[in-house]
Length: 114
Image (cartoon, rainbow, N blue to C red; front, side, top):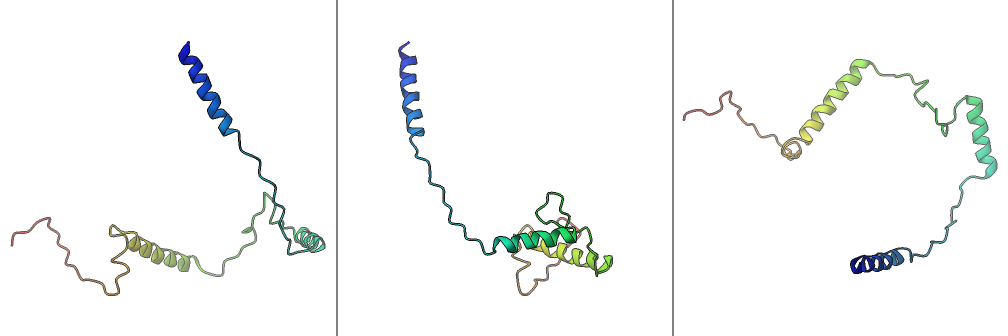
């Protein structure tokens, strides 16, 4: 019974110190760069265009038309992929950042007699 009383006193002491925090005052120091009329004008313009960037269903790519061919984009992706693979290689990309590449002979055999 004595242990339960000691545990209750300790728990109450910790609970009191945890709840001893005062609430912070609300800071209202926001300064708008637009007037209310400018914001409402933007909203009217978005409604006329049928677009609302603050909407949950806003789709920015709905009317997007690419100016590049699929082959150009694929080639750029493959070049970037090779660059990223070199930069994140086993040596953390230090060989990719080296100004002059070191020519290393690579053999087909695991170990060769000399």
